[in-house]
Image (cartoon, rainbow, N blue to C red; front, side):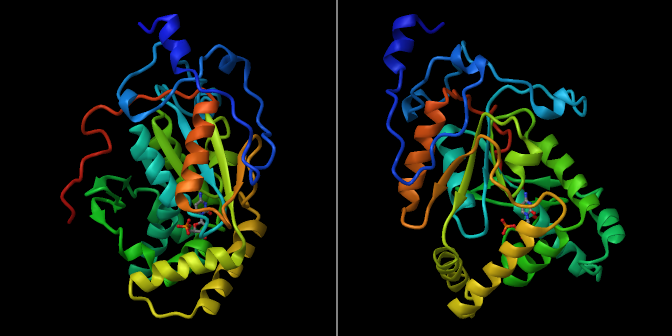
Length: 308
Ligand code: DC
């Protein structure tokens, strides 16, 4: 049991918001007022604070799932190239949670469709393809991997072409409904950081902490271009900025779950911030919200299964 003095010693001082943060929109829910702020430093990893409580996941409230939440849900939304996946993976490693890359699911569907000759515009065929697919996100050698039906597609889904396919695939409401359901199943027990475009708005609107990352198209294009260069894809910076503009337009204007800032999210403009700066802001915010943590049971989501 944690004594009152131990809890007091762990209290994180309130800090002034960073100048690049939008004013804190979220109000602490009444439940949170009961929870002491806990210093989530590396030494304390593995402890489960006994005073910690979590609200019921939205899915459980709607009667869609009987899944019990045992640990926090953190969501990160925002357009392409804002560093969501890098930061989500870092947060997950730091707190001992799992990282679930929802964009990878749309990419994997686009890849599987292309392999089977299904056009990215054919919603009924995509729905049929997607419904039985299983997704896993194991950590392999410190990296987040993506497995679909046991096959390692981590590299294959990262090409520019598959990215554009994913953007088209993501416009189909029935396909989205299937993936949203799978995302809820993957994350409803908590202890996850999930990133995407609709995670704080649709998938887990009642997540413990919601982030929205943004940056200018130029900054995002530059980051994406560097990534593509590292993977040996030969494109010009102008082409990548152009592609980012098209994807932004698709993601923000589509009918089904367009990209929006989730209600109560902490918005961070990452244009002039390093990954380390943003990471610190996010860790601070998670502590500010009094979110405690628990590590996963050994092997849960952390194994690196044999890829086929
Ligand atoms: O984040 P990403 O580039 O890997 O995402 C690929 C595409 O999937 C992107 O165009 C937007 C879409 N997407 C989505 O619509 N909803 C999500 N939750 C995640 C991604």
